[in-house]
Image (cartoon, rainbow, N blue to C red; front, side, top):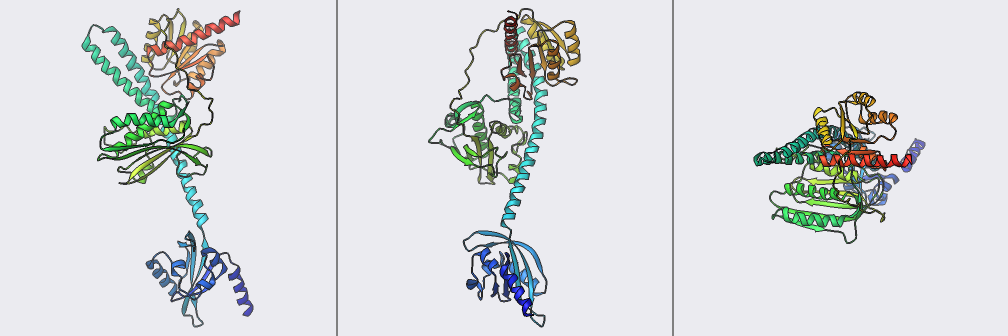
Length: 521
């Protein structure tokens, strides 16, 4: 028996877990080295005292309930709760409680075996956050694909509406009333095109034109605009950074981020409040939590903060605010695209977003952009506006599955001196080209039987170097293809204007003529 007790004592002494024994009145009778390490108190400080504030549970009700169960002879296994270390650190622990019996079988005390699970709890919390972020990213990706498809189809319709409206305006110059009505149609089409551009920003289907810019300047511009429009009952506080906040991004888009967030904040403060816009530099690592999407790499970031003292929102609402068409505003008061646009702009610039909100206390958005360190970047030069030349009988093969789009294109190009062949799909286009060789392919990107990319590939096998102008309401990366220095390819976004189309066609044909002359010399 003595050997058994010595062995048991050795196990208690060497255990990494905290092993504690207490009498029914709360007096500690055993406090092993594991308990000393876990809680920071020595056995000399605890044995013979009541340490319920350390080893007890969070509330008197919990202590009473568990003690009653143990006194009744029950075991409590792996009860998870929290304790406080001597230095004030909060610990997550898993504790098992057992009754201590005397020789007559009467319960005379309680033994507790506790294990520190703080690291496990933190790892589980981080994994939950990663899973939530992954699910959000997947949901946003799916919604983005849907939004991109909607934008493509809608831009087809807008191209038809805006161009036929322009034709009608040209033919009714002697009727002011008709001109006014058509002008309203044209303005409505422009507004609709603006909505689809926001959709494409969310889907990252419309390319940015990045430049090296100081976010302080963007903040100053936003201040000048908002000071006149935000409302007299809202106090606008703008805090630029003392040093330049250089990022590589599209300046117009950064303004759009600021304005969208500010308008959202204003709408959340119908009775007035305070709106703060602030720029700072922050150092983040790849394990930073609470960001959507997660950071691609650690480093220095420009932090753009927009905070309000408005109505705030619940966690459930905050989890969905970047989804397109999701809005809590009354019908007719919001499109549900403002924050989806912000998300698209920030992520397209390599950044991330953090949202913190409490109902009735306000909301803070933090947008993080990678700090630019390449001073050689220059803003793109603005091209000179020149009068558009006419065609000289060049043959253009125009392909689109929308009849009205083909009519619009043929009318614009015919009036500008080009010859035009039109086809509703890739197979028909190949047949037409076999009968009459085209000098430029103008094709939609997304078509039912054959994509524009595939059609261009097949025609360029027949005619190496054939210029190709893609047209689409959803670029699917083709804008990037067209801007990589290959002058045989171009891209025009639907809805387009007659001038825009003729400009792109002229550029491609002119380059092709120059290249052909160079190779024949």
